[in-house]
Length: 85
Image (cartoon, rainbow, N blue to C red):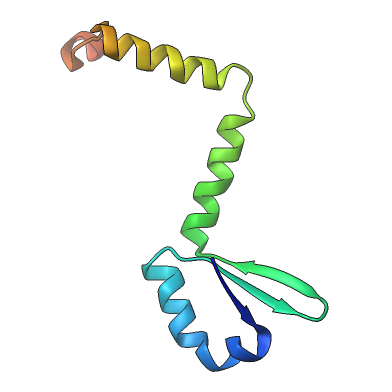
């Protein structure tokens, strides 16, 4: 993650905005008062969803169990799952 001062940010804003939106890059913008992070709304929402999922009880175990099922061939076809809907 690249760090820019607030003064540098003023001069590079269009470039930084494009990098953030198109390249999924994050920037740390620093000033004497502190720092903030600039990221796209899409990346922010993705991060929020990930945090929400990881906060669910037993989510990690469920993912691990699914990986083991796939590895051992315990799978269902789309037809089996949807049952001819």
